[in-house]
Image (cartoon, rainbow over all chains, first blue to last red; front, side, top):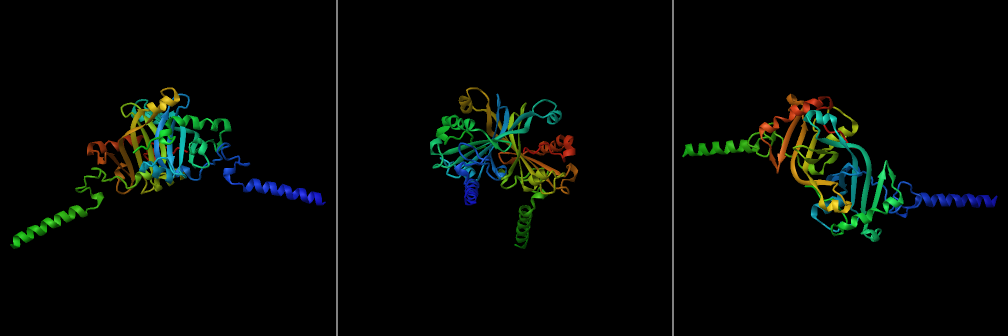
Length: 173
Length: 173
């Protein structure tokens, strides 16, 4: 009986640790990116616009880049490197020809945002992510984080713009 | 002497009326759209994102559509017609191939926002703009409103989407 009680207490303790863990610990958090421990930031869809783009090729998307207040302030003031706490969100949707718009224009010229493809975040924390330029990277599709192999490719792709603190997107006035 | 004083008083009165006029009166306000009396809304660059698009053809731009809080709430709740006070902003920039991005991708696939082309606004006021579907329309380039002939073309182009309260852009989730 005492052994069973001890076992139950141990189980409760382990479950408690798992559920109380901070996001950054990457412990048993299936909603967090598996490499950097990043979750989808609350309210990111309300953030201010940095710029827009179209990636052709295999991606073939339309994208918007948004920033939290720390990121927007740094963009507008030209502050580099970005301060800790800056988060940049890249939303993307399929690049979709709009029949209804084209009818009005009288020709095929209008491409609009279709269904969402995935969402990416860059989170600035110069200590936590010192080995990747001070940035953590995360990608989510339908709310689920990409696998570790995918996440590990992010940083290398951003190294060519190290002189702009690893950020591709420029602010669109 | 009394005549000069009267003349001066009259001049002061006329100037006073001109400067105190409400924006909607379209009186001597060179910053307002000449047809609908719309000025560039304060802080519109901070508004939330509705969607993004690419118009090819002669326009050849990348665009972002933003909304003030009234517009965003109506979009997210599916409320149509939009309530009075809703304002939708369409920002556009030249559709610009990005050499620096293409180098990283290893092929020509990246198109980004270049220089701003113009900004357009739709302002919902069902009484003031009753004859144009309840919407006022305005376009600005470098802070200056388009001429009256241009502004008068807006409404007719939006009539084909009257069943969506004259608004082309759908919300991008």
